[in-house]
Image (cartoon, rainbow, N blue to C red; front, side, top):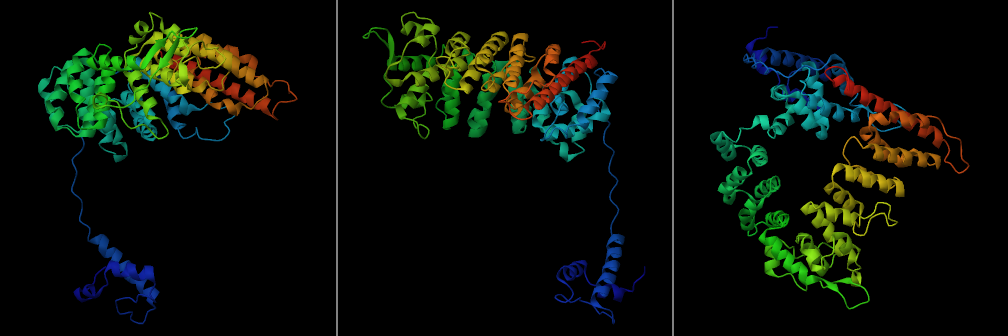
Length: 540
C-alpha cells in the first residue's frame, strides 16, 4: 500500500481512532475529512490503514543468544512403570477437588508419597515430566521441597526460562547443592556478605547443621549491622545443634533492642538446662511453687509473682499478658515453662514426674501449672515428663492430668519415640473413639504401626455399625488413605459390604460407608503398587 507524504501527514493517530471507537463517533467526531462517507465506515477504513502502518513500522527484534544446554542428570532413570505412574499422578493433580468422590482414590494425595519414595531411591526425573512437575509444585507449596529435589538442577535451568517457575530459584537457595561447603571459607564469606536474605538464611542453616560453631561465628561478625527482622530469623536458625557453646552469644542477645529477638534468645537459653538463664528461672519458679504439708495429704501450693521486675523482663518474661489473661498467672506460666524440669523432683522431696503431676494443686492453679510443665517438657524434649503429663490414654478425662488441650497432647506426643507415640494414640482411640483423634494421628510416624492401624480401622467399623454418616470421619479416613500400612488391606475386605440397616441409622449411611472403605482399600493397593514400581527389581 502506497500513500503520499501529504496523506500520511493527515492520517489520524491510532490513539485518536481508539478514543472515537470507544466513545462513539457522535460524541467524539473523527479528526479527519470523511469525504462523503459515514463516520463509522470512515473510522473502520482509517483503523485498517493505521493497523497496516503500525505493523509495517515494527523493527525486527535482535537475535537472542541460545541458552546454555541444561545440565546432565547422572542419577538413575525411573523404571518404566514408575515413570508411567508419575504421568498419571501429575495428570490428575486438578482432579482432587470437592464433591463426592465415591470409591475413586484421590491421586493428588498420593503424589507427595510417590515423590518421597522416588527421592529415597535417588531417581532422576524424566525430562518430559519436568514442566508438569513444576506446575504442580507451583500450585502446592507443600510439594516444593520433594518436587525440586526430584527435579534436580534442571528445574533451575527451566525456572530461568519461565517466570511462573521462579519459586524454584528461591527455594533452591535452601538446597545444600546450591551452597558452598564449609571448607570453602572464601565463598562462604562472600555469600554471607553479599547474598540475598534467603540465601543467607539457607547458608546459615546449612552451616549450622554441619559446623555449628562456624555458623555462630559468622553471625556474630555481622550481628550489629543486621536488621531486627533479619536478626530474628538468623537467631532462630541456631535451634539446630544448640549447645552450651552458644550461651555467651545468646546471653548477649538478651539485651537486644528488639523484643522479639530477646524473647527468642530467652527461649533458646531455657532449652539448655545448664544455662545461667535456666538457673535464674529455676530460682524464681521455686519461690512460686512449693510442697504444702499442712493438710492431711501433700499438695502443691502456688504463689504467683506479684510483679514483673526489670530482671525478669531482661530474661525474656513478657510483662503484658494477652487479652483476657491475668498478669500473675501469665508471669507464673512463663517462669515455670522456662525452668529446668530437673528443678522439681528435688523441690518435691525426690518424687518422680508421675508422682508430682498426680499431686493436687491448691486454689485452682492446677491447669496453669500443668500447662506450664507441658511447655517445658516440649521445649526441653523430656520424654519422662511428657509421659507423666499425658497420663493413661484410656483415662476418663481423655487428656491425662496435665494435657489441657488436644494441641498440648499432640506436642507432648511429639517428644516420645515413634513406637511409644503410636501405642499411646492407639490406646486413646480404643478408649475414646475417633472424635478427637485427628490431631493426635497427625504426629504419628508413617506408615502407622500395626496396632495403631488396627485401632483406627476398628474405630471406623464401630462408627459404621453405629449408623452415622462417614462424613463426620472424613478427616481420619483421608489420613488412613495416606498413612495406613498397605499390609492392612486384607483386613478391610470384611468392611466392603453394605451393613444391615439399623432402625436408628442415618438414611443411606451404609452405602456411603461401603464407598469410603472401597476407596480406602483401592488407595492402599495403589500405594503398594507404587512401592513395587519404584523398586529397582520391581519388588517391594
